Image (cartoon, rainbow, N blue to C red; front, side, top):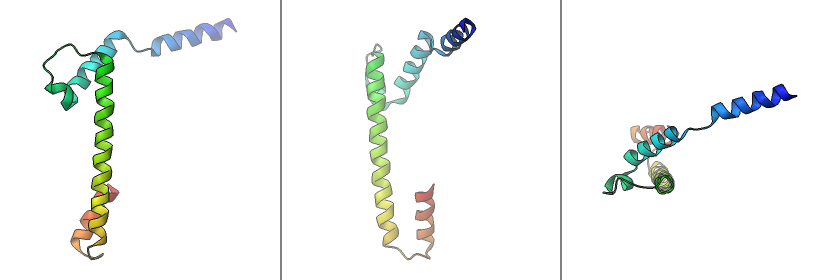
Length: 94
């Protein structure tokens, strides 16, 4: 029983994210998210970076949904056998 506990604690200890890894991730996110790149301040909290990242991802999802709707409408208005319809179908299935 005690060997299971020590094994489990070693496993959970080795899978924990280090402070350096968190800092590295926050730094990478700061460079990827346009809203954070525009800011002059070098010191942005990790929670702010994560909040902006979530907002950015939500906006991307909305844009994808809007584009999908527009492509579906366009597909509905084209001839099913046309080259344009084939291109739109490939975009919707990609």
